[in-house]
Length: 430
Ligand code: GLU
Image (cartoon, rainbow, N blue to C red; front, side):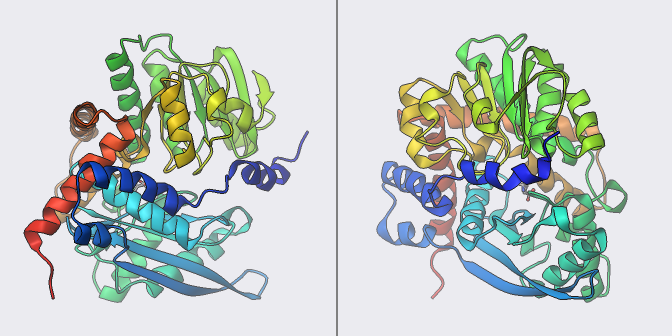
C-alpha cells in the first residue's frame, strides 16, 4: 500500500498554482470597487490590512531541542466590530496567505451581516509530526505572543485548517490565565462544556449544504439524486458530504491530502469518516476507484465542493470541470484566473465568502451566547443559521443580478458596500 504521508507534499505542490492569494482577493475587490465607484480614499483604506503581527514562537520539543516557529496574526478591518477569524497550523502558511484570509473574513462577515470585522492567524508548522504536548506548548506561546490584540471586543479566534476544539480550549485557557479570570468569549469553536455552541462543529458544512440547496433550487435542478464531489475531507468536507447525502444527493467522489476515491453509484460519507479514523487518510479506501485530487476536480458530477486548500481550481483545469455548480467550502479555492473560464462555461459558483460563512455565523452565535451567559438548543442554532444563509444567498443573487455580474462579484460588492458604509458614517480619525 502507498504510504499516504509521502503523498502529501507532492500532491499539495501540484495543486498550488502560482497565484498569490492576496492578489487573487484584490483582483475581485478591485472589480467590485469599480462597480461601486468607491471613492479614492476609501479604496486605499480598504486595500490595506489594519494590523499585521509577526511573532517567533519558541517551543521545547519532546526531543529536548528548542524549535522556533513563525506565527502571524493579521487584523484586516475592524470597522464593523471585533476582528474575527481562525488560526491555522500548516507548513504552507505565509503572511500573504494570512492577509488574504483576513480580508476574506472581513468580506464574509459583511456578506452575512454579522457585527464583526475580519482577521486571521497562522503558524508555520507541520502538526501531523507534532505530539499533543508540543502542539499545546505551541498554541499557548503563540496565544501569549499575540495577547494584546486578543479579546472579546477586539479579536476573536476560531478553528481553521489543522486546529480544532482542543486548540481553542488552550487559547481560551491561556488568555484567561493572563487576565486572571475566565473569559469564554475570547475564542469560538470551543468544546461545548466550556462555552462552545451546539451546532458549531457542523456549521460550515451545514452552510455549504444550504447553499447547495439554494443554488440548485435557483437553477431548477433537483437536489435528490444530484451527484456531488467533495474535495477535502476535513471538518468542512466530511460534514458537507454527510448533510448532502441526507438531502438525497449521491456523493460520487471524495478526497483528502492523500488522494481521492470515485464511485458513480455513490459513497457513504460516514463509512469514509470511519475509514479515515482507522487509517488516518482516505487513501486505500476500497469501495471505489482510486483517483488523484486533480482528477477528482474534473470528474463527472453535478455539484463540486472544493473544501480543502486555496488555488485548486485554476486557469489550467477550470476548462475541464464538468460540474454545473461549484460550492466553495474552502477559502479561496478558485484562482482569479479561473473565474472567466467558469463563467464562460456557465458554471454557477457559490463563492467562499458566502458558501463557507456558516462557520463564522455560528461563531457569532457562540460569542453572543457566551456574553449573555444563556445557551441555545441545537435546533435554535440550526434554524437561525438556515435563516441567515438563505437570506444571504438571496441577497447576493439579487446584487449579482442588479450589476449583471457573477455570484462572486455580487458577494464582494455587497460586502464592500457594507464595510464602506460604516467607514463613511464613522469618518476618519485624525
Ligand atoms: N475558520 C473559519 C473560516 O474561515 C471560521 C472563522 C470563525 O468562526 O471565526 O470562516
